[in-house]
Image (tube, rainbow, N blue to C red):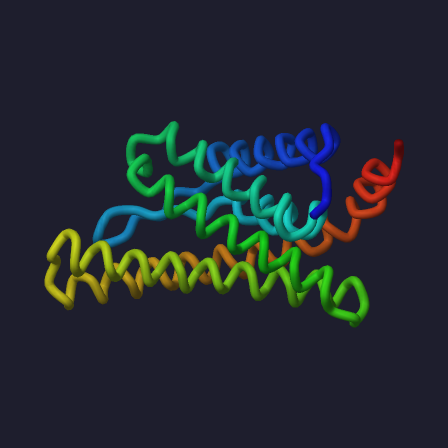
Length: 183
């Protein structure tokens, strides 16, 4: 097992802060028939965390930054544990694919970020279905309407996240790699 360094903790903290800021301040609210949802750049930073830091550190940065956003917003506070887990998994999968595949770096970034982003969409939609149907007890028709609307917005958010994160990751990777390798 790799020893955790101050540099690791610093990078996780910086990326967690970037995830938080992008989630909180780089967003567009989307009104829907059943409330509202939003497009935000937090997922870009989550994917970037996995790309630049690797699976576990990237997952921690994504989960921590997203969880803190939820904890500071009354509308999302009860979702904080799920958000931590789901965003961790998104960045972890992205980082794992990038580190394990043997194709070119650009293809690894595209594949890893796409897999991570759409796994997150599936987890989020599954949670929405379970919560609305079995916790809140909403009728199936209302649940399916909510799931359909959130699926569309989340999928658009996933595509935007991949399109923005891949070139950012490719541009930033040399500097982050150099920083990590310095003593």
